[in-house]
Amino acid sequence: MKKLDNQKRAGVREIEGITVGIATGFKKCDSALKFLEELTGKNVIASECFGKKWKGVIAILE
Image 1 (cartoon, rainbow, N blue to C red):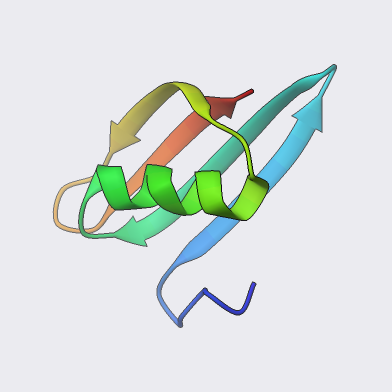
Image 2 (image 1 turned 45 degrees about the vertical axis):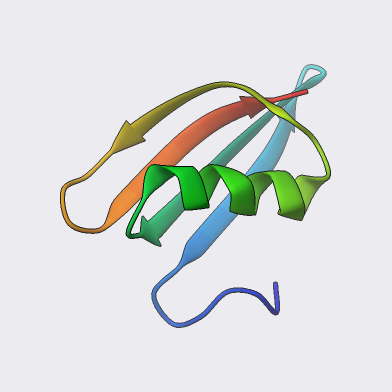
């Protein structure tokens, strides 16, 4: 959580053995995915990017 600044937000939930993460407030989707991987210690297996200037991503991690 120390990595979050005032604009970036992230959340992670374990749902029936599947880890789902969402991160918002990033300039690039790749950096949001990397952030979720660092936060959880898991690899992204599927993701969807959203937003225009400030982007977010929802991802499934293994």
